[in-house]
Image (cartoon, rainbow, N blue to C red; front, side, top):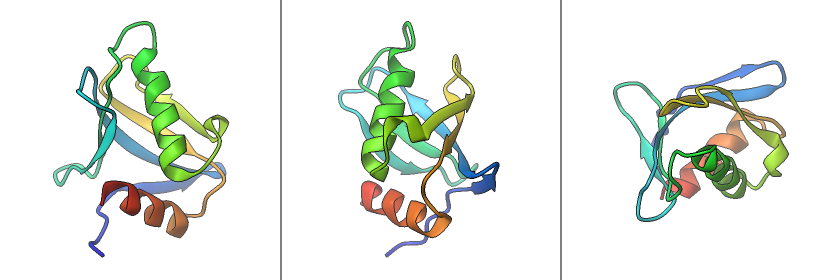
Amino acid sequence: MTELDLTVVAKDGELRFEVHAKPRAKRTSIIGVRAHDGALEVALAAPPVDGAANAELVKMLAGALGVPKRSVRIIRGDGARTKLVGVSGLDAEEFCARIRRAIE
């Protein structure tokens, strides 16, 4: 397996990481980790209108990580492409393993 260069910080009982969203993609998927800033890069089929892309991001991450949608939240960046996302209910090792599987 490849090394996951995603920057993850444990704070307040959750794991936090940066996400770079690309709305209006052909399909929703996790593209990979950006080398220059350690952010998870995701493609979202939904447009960035009325929170549709944010809702799709939460749904997609919850599905990829195997956690309920309520365990995934956007902490910062509701109206931006770069967001800080928090996930609860997973330890760092399991989180990284699940993200790695979603990328590969």
